[in-house]
Length: 320
Image (cartoon, rainbow, N blue to C red):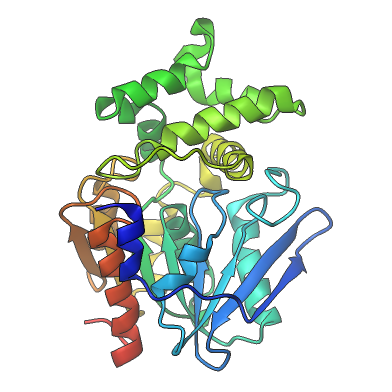
């Protein structure tokens, strides 16, 4: 099934009824938008990466007649400025940004929907501000552990050796024993002749591994590549600004809230063991393992499960 046919499973395209910018400090200015029903149940969409940014497709997991859909580009991503800025960019600061956005929009509580890095951020935010959350829909679980980071940098080669070879061969042979620091040296340069090719290579590596079945090769923009490349490397080099096992140890703060975990069985970017570990710590959450999916949200089984989760919350006010 092609990507264009998968998106027919989603709600129809829609445009924001309101958008704006939020200056969260003297360096970072965030883009945000609202879609759907202005008086509806608030839901927050958290994009992946870090640095991935939002897209029009992300609005379409939610019934726009029921939900007040809030989306924003995290620090350094998408339409937020400065693009690719890694300074003053940490998980606690992103959590504070979400809370500042919630209060600025006058929202008391919202459903939190996040995939990949968005699942990490959703858990961190929920554990810091459980009183602001109605529940969670989480996809492609990433817990921010060093094991997961090492897997991304080196382990994917067991399944995508050709993609990893291209990723490694971008770096000179004498630096390939430490790919993440070699990429970081280039990505954090002030010279676009250094950081842009490195960002493109990093993003191409990840993009080539996200779908179970091959998709048409359509290179991402430099905006996407720079946000993804710089910020993923920055967060991985800093252990995602999380204490060891922080997100599993903190589950008690949100255990009482309804949650659905959607995980692709053949996700090589965020392997299923992380979803399994999260569910073991949080058995009250539902785990939906999608038998024929990789990492991408827009694969048939995953997209269907995500829409089913938002519909279950709409219809019953809880998951079952």
